[in-house]
Image (cartoon, rainbow, N blue to C red; front, side, top):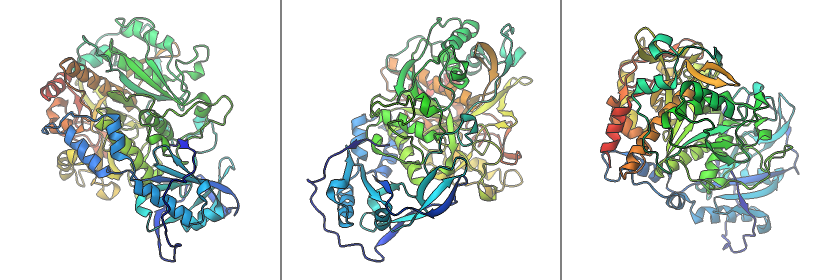
Length: 626
């Protein structure tokens, strides 16, 4: 993301670098597989202008990891000592040397000082350059690529290099090996991004509701009974749960549907109850009741699950992106980045053309206002039910975005992500990597978020089993981008030691040393919802994530009332206290051939994680902590 403060860099003391000599360049990034939707055509036009953006490296990334692990460790004296947003920003700001070195290198490469611009906090340096200049600066060759679906053209290179004196100062540069957001398509044609949800099925409005055991229908009361969740008695100001929604899926929730749902399933909630809108980049809600096509059933699902658990605690809706942008196939991470911008002004400067939409929005009626740089304070709990293939985003940008979740953890925010609805791949049956290697869903694979899988209530045994409604199975597996964090190694090793072939899949198909998901799970099938004036049954891990996020919000409520701090990054506490979960030992998830990938078993497993929360036990653990 980017936020430029245009000014001349005349105050910079000139560094004297010798003109780059042969052998002084070091390869910085190289693209792996060629993109399936773009085809290489010709050498890029020599005088075409491209905006080179040099995204500088954060300071202290590894120290930031250590700091988060320390304040999230229940045995540490620093547990819960969360940082302020200013402390976080100052801790990670790039070195002055990084900024000065890159600017000096550009000047010695022939770029006039008047053409160099920087972001407000000097984390981004930009130069509008010709293709010829860019190739000289980056020791590369640009080609024109054509999008197979639309015929749109862009420029990209296979790899690029940096002068050895600046390579350690730069995270990544765009545009280089990355490709831009796909040109405008119908949402139904967007193959890469999927909201975590199952197709709704008809449910009569006069359906007689009994308890869970007699109907199999998961209502708010069923959820509260199963997990022993009490009613909220003392809502705390500032403890409103945050929910991420985007117009990439429909538009927004329907107030009429919320009213209908509350009247039927949870009449304790007054008519008209709604979340507080936190608009990001033109996001609006609720949907126009006169246009059913603008109603998001998935947004309805979030609020119809959250409110009965947390009410009368408030809910904040972070509705991201305007309707015109929502009509494009904009990658999930682009919308997530807009939200992160609104929490962290320093992230506003970082930009990746392969995931971030244009600003100002060039489409008719698009958002033309200011970028939302640090406009909102992050909530204590943030629930997100979206995901994308881990492999399609460059590692450099995955790392930058994952670090933002680390920053939120340092500030005391619990970030909750759905783990996915297609087993060991994000969606469908054709998303494995070469050789059939599993391809998990990001951002659930970031080690600084809580990944939530899905369960099903077995009507015969009245116990939870792993969710299964082909092709839906609980998302789980092992990251190919992130190493396994220390907080889960013991639990994961125990599973792997007892699930080698023939009791488990071929180890060559997954990265056993990678970040393992999910961490926990919750009910995700046969969920009662109201949509477009009708009652339906829905589900997916997009149901499980807000359930778990709501329970953590209730824990925070009790802690705040007792003068304690929010729980923040919960993963280390969860793995050190597995007895607070209902262990799920039956079920499986599927691979890209619709065959069994992993199975649920005693202890942690890559289908349901540690299990589903037992709220009284969870509360007991966290109330004992400082």
